[in-house]
Image (tube, rainbow, N blue to C red; front, side, top):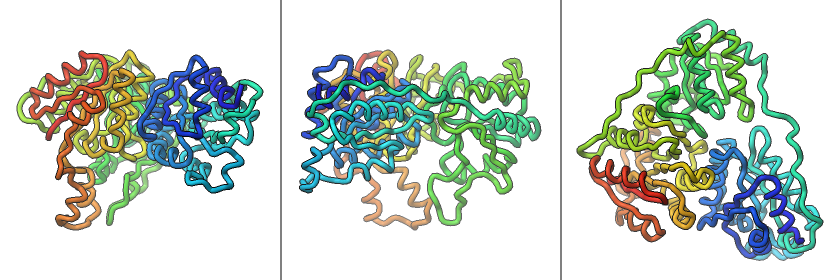
Amino acid sequence: MNGAESLVRTLVAGGVDVCFTNPGTSEMHFVAALDRVEGMRCVLGLFEGVVTGAADGYFRMKGTPASTLLHLGPGLANGLANLHNAKKANSGIVNIVGQHATYHIGYNAPLTSDIEGLARPMSAWVRTSPDAKSVAADGAAAIAAAMSSPPQIATLILPADTAWNEADGIAQVPAESQRPGYSSQAVDHAAKVLRSGGSQNLLLLTGSALTEKGLALAQQIAGKTGCKVMGQTYNPRMARGLGRFAIDRIPYVIEQALPILKDFKNIVLIEANDPVAFFAYPNKPSLLKPEGCEVHRVTHGGDNSVAALEALAGSLGAKPADVVPQKPMDIARPSGALNHANIAQAIAMAIPENAIVVDESITTGRQFFPPTAAAKPHDWLQNMGGSIGFSPPVATGAAVACPDRKVICMVGDGSSMYTIQSLWTQAREGLNVVTIVFANRIYQILRGEFDGVGAGEPGQRALDMLKLDRPTLDFVALAKGMGVPGRAVTTADEFNKALEEAMAEPGPRLIEVQM
């Protein structure tokens, strides 16, 4: 077998059985190997940002890495924004990036670039295979890196001649050297902190702590100690809905976050980061915690945070009987003109059992969290890195990982245009994704940021860089052109009906919410 086939067989044997791909000339032997080797599902994306974002969504739901196949430096560069988001979410991905044949690189052909240099900022592991006989072992090492604790992005660069030359065979993925754990000393210290102070203590969660079991343990700890439990502003995945502990998140807007955090004396971190502002603003703080507030870390990303919470609950003597029942928010089928509040109610009513919600609703979605806590049980995925064009690809990958679950993709009209090609992949693969585009015809988040940084009153030229008009985007037509049925709604009653129909039908659907 050649190097490409040895790599594909190594990937499949190592549990990597999905490849999100956008290949080019230097990857054709890898494409041929994918054709010959059974066991690898190949999913084509029409833009590399779709490919990398889909791999992120796949990992978040499956817990094992997919591979990508990207064309040289420019192909990798096109996918870097969603690799940035994946890195911030601790998603494991195996990137396969084509390279010119080793003997051709020195001629400085038009597509020659520093691929390793491009890969390193978003990848924890980068390697260029030097010859065909090294490819399988390098692939196995990439899988091991992607599946480490914490999971990582691994980028293997495959020169064309290492793909077509003769190889030795497949390689075995190295056994995991250690299982995720936690520090018992950190748990003991956190227990000491939480035993006193009551509501002046904050237990701040993200990552694996936001599973249903992790949240249940946090609820017991809160009931026993009186501490407040919150999530980061953005989280890779959170269990939500009826029967699950509903927690608030730290608000994005500094003026809203500061009063919420001002009375805390201690913040206990379970994978979470120290609360900081998303951006710097004139005359506003970067740190959101109050002066004198102490931070105590229990776990990092990749640690066994559920086991740490179990130990913390045990140390505190916290039990299910300590749980203070939550009063669920009332939700009802809305009617009348569309606004942020009744959009949230409509979505909360429509979320089906065991759905996956991928949230890039930006400004429109800031009121979505309270009512959707009363929806049927579901998982909620958010953008950890802030690079827009996140949710359509991540929804695509989540649907590939979980074909039996309905995926709801919520996205602003501006964000959606970065990776709108995701709809084509969803149509081709028959994925159960309902995309809701909030069409307010403006980068509303930027309009708010313009005021937030004190840039003054925007003139016409500034507004032209923020508004999405002249011409107005037609998302129903865009969806139709990529094989996805769509409809536009202008009232809450129309939105209710569109959601009901979209949730009942298999395959992809799009709803344009005209605001």
